[in-house]
Length: 130
Image (cartoon, rainbow, N blue to C red; front, top):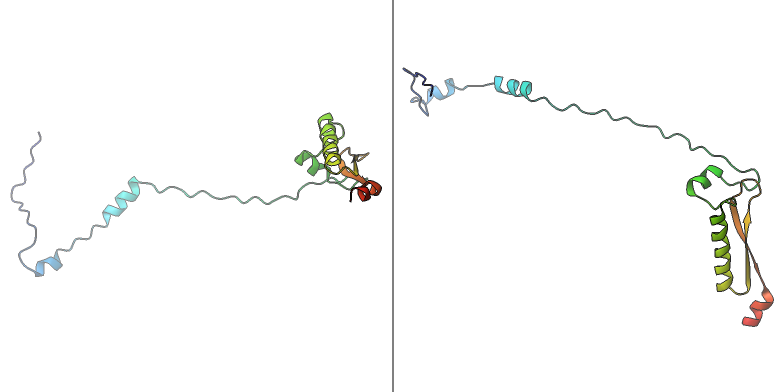
């Protein structure tokens, strides 16, 4: 071990005179400077704000539907056979529940998306059931 020589230095807890306490006040401002040099503060990230761009729209001239919105929402399209079957299944279920109704899907001629279901009511059947 390494030995150090501390001859002539006496360490005491408190000075003997009460007046000496005020005189021996030590302010160590170097400690905070050393800590700041050793530990770097994390840099704050700059937040970028993106402006919302206007949503692009493309409307069908015939039916007036937003074609891009239908693509995004996966709207029923005539070219897709699965969508055709789903539309026909809906009509069959509707006719089963309401026996006096006739249902038919209506597709747009230009864009090919489903615009509405045409439902016709047979009033003669409805009056007989009442």
